[in-house]
Length: 114
Length: 141
Image 1 (cartoon, rainbow over the protein chains, first blue to last red):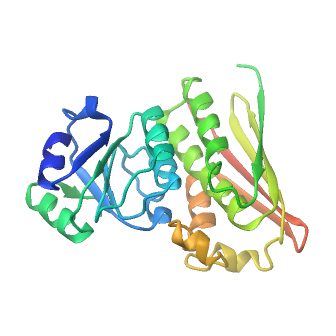
Image 2: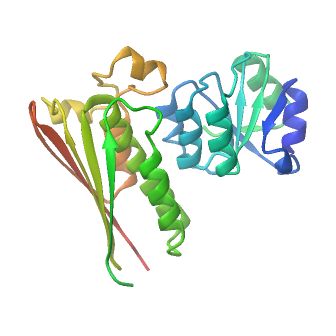
């Protein structure tokens, strides 16, 4: 699924990485535990999370996550956006819950990791 | 390829800078034409170690030695030390503060994840002095 479609399904807003809206993603992982994100064994995924701090971006950088969907109106601050841009990461902000985002995307064919 | 050495200072409690050393190292390793999966495993392991220093210690240093056969990383810190390394290696055991947990860490998964992502992990710790982690990753091929 193209990132642009993820944005639309999640009623989201693209905060950075607009140039990658045509990138295709197949898998997602939902977690508020960054330690858990660091154990995933697939790169290029969508991370759905309610944790919005600089370490969310660092974790995505190390684990090679491609796109971060911040749910339930969590906001990316400027430092997060700058770091995400440095690492060609897409950040999307969405008002819907993690459960809702996961459910809708799953229904549209995004696959779980486990 | 000649041996290469890198050092990165680490600051306890500084969650803004946490990850900077691992990020810098990852960028260097990516330029050395190493297997991308190996680079990712090292990045995850060093980042876990860096977060541990930031979460638990006063300060530390990450020393990296890249040689043709292996990448050796030593993370030394000045801090409280680990009273029971066996316990600390158990998944789910953690002494992290609420602040660390609120950031999304402190689940007691760090050391076991470091072990999973490296070929060899050695931990030496002295109470009220500090901890040394030595991680070895073999370069195959």
